[in-house]
Each structure stands twice: as structure tokens, then as C-alpha cells.
Length: 356
Image (cartoon, rainbow, N blue to C red; front, top):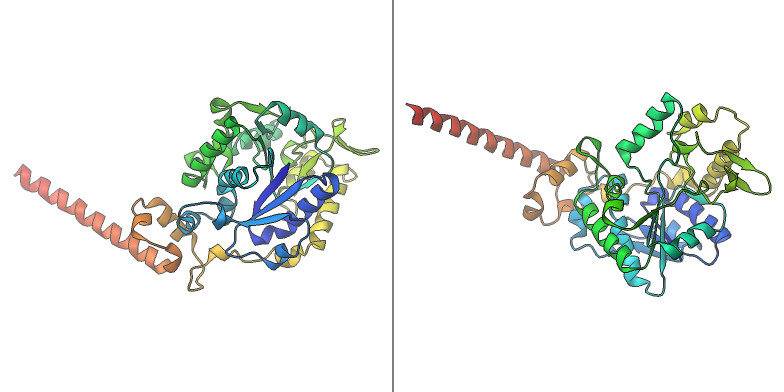
């Protein structure tokens, strides 16, 4: 089995904690890091838990700079996941099982149940929620969020090599290459919303073991306990998804649904934060993204990415967007607006002349 994750350098501490937990619990697994940077960061090169490192630009995209320029950092880390699976299928022909885990995950035990599922199914997904919520607050926090962001949490995805999984990877990669944006009003949330369609197109297994993908959004229905081992609803804990734990983004949700500070989730959380600190989170966590700058060193503004992304002719007119500047995109859109206004005024004048 290969387990992989895709990150920018600021997530290296998380990837180190993830890889270490995999090696300690599933030592037979190979861990492949996909790093979305121009060069391999020294902290990645020096980590013995990574069996291999591949840069995003080496995954096989035809015009990688044009592709990556369209995306903010979080969008970019998710937009390459389909192509990453295609790369793994091609470059590791001796492997038959491939698992993606988000970097902010820690593995706590051997994943026997997942192996069993992959014996029978080519595509395995976990939903954000496995049980209906009972109170309105939880419906609004969790069920409405799942409807907005995607039914399935793409912090986990497992594929067994087959014609079906290859067909799925090709489809997913093509959609992410075109539309992997944080744009909920348009019905898109990075890579996740696309997977709502996957059970319609492919033979997908929805994996509901409570010990997989435990996270803030399902703690209202998953009870963590520590006896001889960590358990969730009486089943072994396999991995916990620490989404937003270090930043505090999900602290309010945890406090709301698990108010008892002696609960096991706080023990797990504190241990995880300590491991991140040991992996140099305070320093590496603030690493600049190398694709956040033009070749000149100027930081790319979000508006420039949006202009490039939403102007259909732009990729054909621009050889390398990183060779440009924010001023170029501002001037470009201004010229386009002026030209558009001139055309509108010309049409109005022509209409008046015709009607005389």
C-alpha cells in the first residue's frame, strides 16, 4: 500500500506527524509526499519518514505554471490530487492500493478494515457524517455544511488498482484541472463537491467505520474513549482528522459538542499540537509559498489570479503568467472594460442611426 498527501511547505510539520504515525502503526506502507513548491524544501529532504518526494510540477501537467497560477494555496493543494493518483498508478506499477490522507491527520492503528474494503471495492470514500443530527445547532453546523462543501470528506480517498479506479482518476483529474476553486456560490468547493457525483458515475463504496476520519464535524455522533486502546463508538480509532486544530478554527465546534474538558478528544488534541511543535510548526508553519510570487519577487494578488482564471483568452495570450505583474492584470482588465464600453456605445449609436 502507498499512502500519499499533497502539501505546500508550510504544512510540512503536519506531513511529518502524519508520516511518522503511519510508519509507527503501518510499517509496511510506503509514504509518498507530493510537495507543491518550486524546489524540495530542506526539511522535507531531511525527513526519514518520507519514502519518496515528488514536486507538483513533475506530476505530468502539460502547462503547470498556467495551471497553478489560477489557484490560491488551498485550492492548489487539492487541485493536483487527481493527477497525483494518476502519477502513482503509472510510477509504482508494483503497488495495487493507494490512499490519500490530508496532512492534518494522525493514524492510530493498523487499517485492517480498509484493506478488507479494498479487497472488494475499487473506490472507497468516507462521508462527513454517518448519522442524522438530533438538534438544530448540529443540523446547521454539520448537515448544512456538508451540503455546501460536499457529502464526502476528501481528506481521505482510497483506490485499488483496476479499470474502474483508473477511469475514476482520469475523470477526477480532468475536472480538478478545469474547476477546483473555493467558490460555493457557483457550486464548487475545491475538490470535494465533484465527488458528490462519483457514486452516480462509478462503483463507489461508502465506508462508515466510526474509527476512520473522526473529525470536529462528526464529534456530536462519535464517542472517543481510552481503555486498552483508543476507541470510537466501541470500534478502534484508526485516524483522526485534526482539521483546524492548530489554528483554533474548529475549537468552538469541539467546545460546543464536547464541553467536558476531561473528554478524550482534548487529550488527543493536546498531544497532536505538541507533536506539531516538536516538528517545528512555529517556524515552518509560516513558510512562504514559492508559487505566491512573480519571478520579480512581487507577491501575487488574489485579484490577479481571478482575472487570469476568469478571462478565457488570457492563457492563450500569456506565455508565463509568473513573468508578469499585478499591474499588468489591472491594466489588462481596465483596457478590456474601456473596449467593452466603446463597443456598447457604438451599438447604441448604430441603433439610433438605423431607427431614424
